[in-house]
Image 1 (spheres, rainbow, N blue to C red):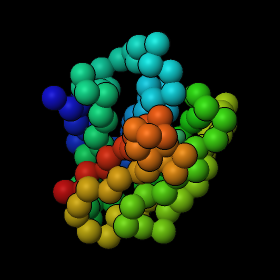
Image 2 (image 1 turned 120 degrees about the horizontal axis):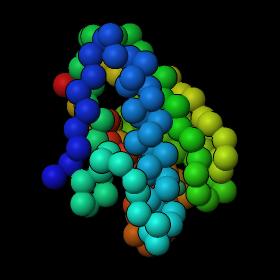
Image 3 (image 1 turned 180 degrees about the vertical axis):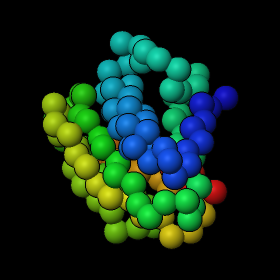
Image 4 (image 1 turned 90 degrees about the horizontal axis):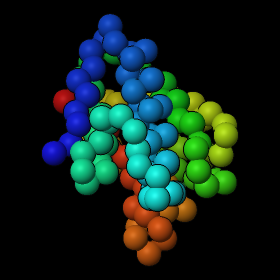
Length: 126
Ligand SMILES: [Cu+2]
C-alpha cells in the first residue's frame, strides 16, 4: 500500500519539502538498492505518491536533491516542466497543475527496467 500525502494551500511549503524528500527518496532507492530507504514515505513496492488538491494553490516548487547517480534529466508528463537532477545538488522546478490527474515525473536516463529503472514519481492532483 502506498503512502499518500494530502496537501492543502496552507501546506504549500510542506508540499515542496515532501516532494523533495519523496523524489530524493526515489533517486536514492533506485540507484542503490543495497541500502534501505529510511522513513515511512514509501510502501513495500517502493512507489511514492504525492497528493495535491487542484485550485487550492497557484503553483508549487518541487525541490529535488540528487543523492545517487551523476545525472537524472527528467520531465513531468503532460507539462512543459523539465530539469536535471545532479548528484549533491538541488534542482527546483515550478509545477502548476491546471487540472486533476496523475502526473508522472520520469527520469530520461532510467525510464524503465532495461535502463536500471523505472525512476518514476507520481503526483496526484485531485
Ligand atoms: Cu535517473
